[in-house]
Image (cartoon, rainbow, N blue to C red; front, side):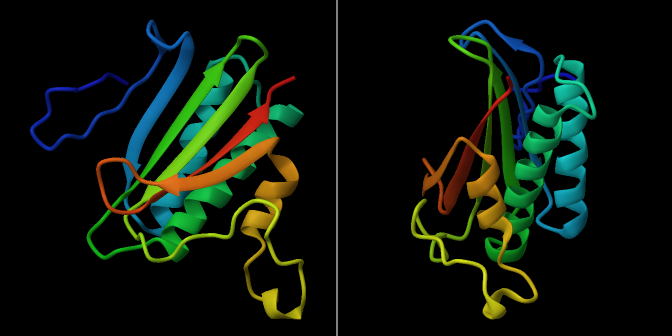
Length: 162
């Protein structure tokens, strides 16, 4: 895949090694639908494998599951009609290998709880609501912040690859 930074729509896809960050970066906008969330998960899996985090490894499975949960949350809780969500995957090697997943949506008024403030699983979560609990359990760090330069928020997570 190639970058098209001069696109009139502003759609940008970064792929490959970034000479500026010393990391591997993949970024793409997806439709805010279940199909978009599935595609985001699959492309994260492919990209990780291409970057040397092989299918079936614990690190691969963890990062893909975290990315899937964040993308699904963007679709379920951050959906604004006609607006996409944006996923960024960055893998850095120094000082230790880490994958950072950032998912941005355009719904600013619905924000997740802060890390450490998640409600425990209970009967009220019978048909969902466990996504951030999984992220909290699997990721080394996670959080959220207001989206820069646009309405909405960015939820991010970092997972060690070793």
